[in-house]
Image (cartoon, rainbow, N blue to C red):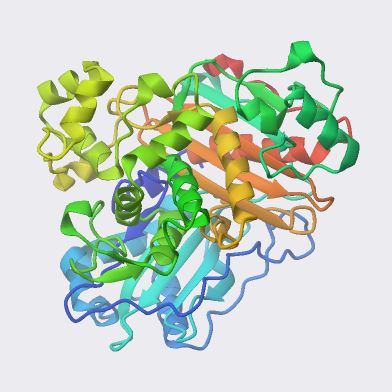
Length: 537
């Protein structure tokens, strides 16, 4: 159990965004499956006699080309003879991931990730009208550990062109979920945690009646635990987040923490705002460029330069499968300054010290370079000096990421100096604003990609809608979850865990998120909040 995150981390590539993947290629004559419909979010598996999904009933892969390939993948994971592995994958895929690497991943995933338990398919959704792509939920038999799998086929050869495993989550939560265990003191590092209700006047207020009017007018004064309490002028906090959020429970240091791939929430906010303002359109083509490619082997990085994708599909990949190349293309299309406006709006206390904002490729270039002097200078530069180095012709703009070093990135690097940083309340404010944007004409599908990133299984009858994102790199584990309760009230849970000395274990983060869900579930019931794991601060 304790080695789960580390094992998943090194399945093939470093899971900077909590995604472990085996490729996803679409080059040369090998084109990806053409999605003709929006992917349905992976919903919680149906439980058996229990209420938390631990006994979710296994299902069979669909009777389709993609379903048969998924059945083969599951068979190999569970110990079947893989036979001729190369015959199942496109030639371009095999250029990126050799047969022996695929064999290693599939034959060790069961032990490394599920502790040797039989891996079962408990939920599956076909992703397009041609039945050439599917997503599903995998579970270890008699465990509460879950993975998301995505598989896509070449549209002519019907061979695997993309295969992804998302280790975010690992476990389930339901009506009988327990509060999170106290984070053990020998883990070290620091934890930031917050559970909030969306109540304010940022256009997304949905709290009914008198409470909404009272808290909106007062500015959203925080209450530390339990249900809403009347606000007074003295309680009103100056941060924008406090105008749209009510604090249910918080703990952790006052300084911001590294959030890795959760920066895509800012990026999603920026692109959503541009679409809502009609400066961009979901169906406009985005041209793939080699200079924007990130982690090799991803679905978008495997495309040839010059190919195009609709902006909506780029955004879906960015959110649903944490596709870093898609993130880079969206970042460049929207523009650094537009994304920085979101950061400045939601993190006014810390934005000045953390800008200019790096693109994903720039972040990787700095984390993976061996030019220590360049990194040291950049970290100590004034903001205007940093910005000059990021502009065309600058030292960082021309710095190529050393992708060969990616698999050796097993220890924290520049954790508190290079990357993306936030507080739980500021990420919660971003989530609340995303909800607001999704209610504007043209942005109804803005959150679709986040529906696949919830990570922990929820009781669908209590939480009929949920959206989430998870981020990770060595020394960083972070998650944000926004949920609509069955009574119409909306909640956000955010956890940020940093340790400069070693990698972290996803199961501990899951405990915090499960506890946050339970705390939100208890609002109105006067139930106690989870314990503050202060021993790790």
